[in-house]
Length: 169
Length: 169
DNA sequence: CGCGCTTGGTTGCATTTTGCAACCCTCCTC
DNA sequence: GAGGAGGGTTGCAAAATGCAACCAAGCGCG
Image: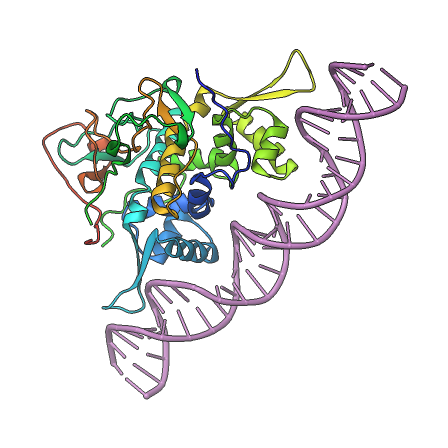
């Protein structure tokens, strides 16, 4: 197996987007709020009740999510007391991360079969496990992976490296 | 409104493994430590230097990861001053979650092209994006997904479709 | 209009969790 | 033994969290 130990020397000198992601989502309640949002929760009081989170913390977390562009805050026109928090595209794209985390918890936790579960609308079957895949879609196990510096990548195929799943805007 | 409200009522009463996962990995440094571990870091001083984390916090986090079975702590036989922290299978299986998070950060962050990158050993090509897939492997977008109660799963016939609203792009 | 009610917040503390230094203890090497 | 690594523990200041109580705009009604 190749050299598994890349520079990494200092976390911020090394270009890794993980700290960036964690800055937005690394707090304790962030993912729980996100989950509620994915479940259709949109209003402050709803979040507060569903999560049993302190109001000031909730307020702070929602603001932060809005600041990071993960949720959008909209004062409702028909009743201007109400504020609607809605996931943005950026927020929606956290779904794989959230599901991966949840599936992991499900597998290794106390056998909790999570509910509700995500199903594919076309056949009503639950989704499969979130996995690491090769550029061509093959599922890869940890043993089949190596860390490489960007500079030493094989230019076997140019354009395929960058296929983003959602490109419609 | 409020028909969509799934149990979820109280975070721990509702069966969701996310809180469970977050209990293990929800702290600020946990994922960073994990990342270092994936990069081949094994020793206390290494983690400390790579992450610039306070020693007491590092100590605490490592213990917690060990307690949660994510890392194994082993005093090395040939030099009993040294302790080797190693990812367990449970820890290794956090890789999809970590990669999903990192890819998200990469896509939405300040255009940081993360390095090092995971490549498939068979063709040296970088891995593809972590996605949600159907049971048969098709990649699913958010619009193709619905939350369902476990109790109303199996039958392929009845569709009680209830989609979470997605803002128009 | 005035009055209560709802929604979405803000205080003002007490309690935890971080983080920084400095110190400590064990084991190795000479 | 002396000295130094490796892997921790203090002790104390600074931040983040959590709990209650309070505030204030915007309805809706008489």
